[in-house]
Amino acid sequence: MTVVYQGSCLCKAVSYELLTAPKAVSHCHCGQCRKGHGAAFASYASVPRSALRILSGVDSITAYSSSESVLREFCARCGSTLFWSRTQGEFSGWVSIALGTLDTHFTPREQKHVYVGSSVNWYTPLDPFHPQG
Image (cartoon, rainbow, N blue to C red; front, side, top):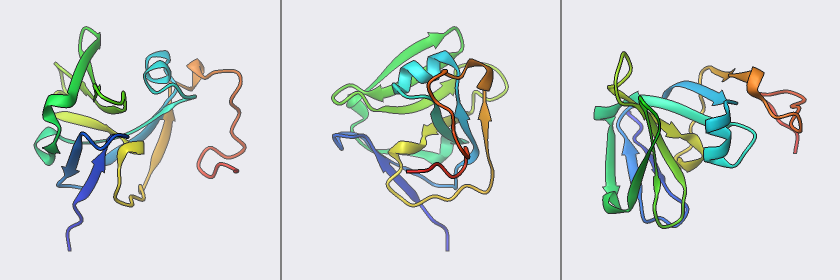
């Protein structure tokens, strides 16, 4: 049985589904991702753009070009970060999903932390894949 992953923003104005399991799970510590999420790092996973289907709220999605080739999309009503993608180059056919917006249970096979050299000094994980709390 194929799982269809569903997700939405905080206010539920935007809902989407992924027609394939997300891949390339990463927790990005770069300054742009930290600021975009308002957190110590941003957790994303990618799917081919053709596997992302917006179910509702397409008019509520706002985009921001954070650099020449990166587009960040979020809900204009509640501010939830939704998607991140490259507008040119090798991975321009893919979109990264903010994993915190998934409503369907998802267990990644592998995950990695990237740009850890840009990490904030106030967050030190005891175990980055099994946080305490």
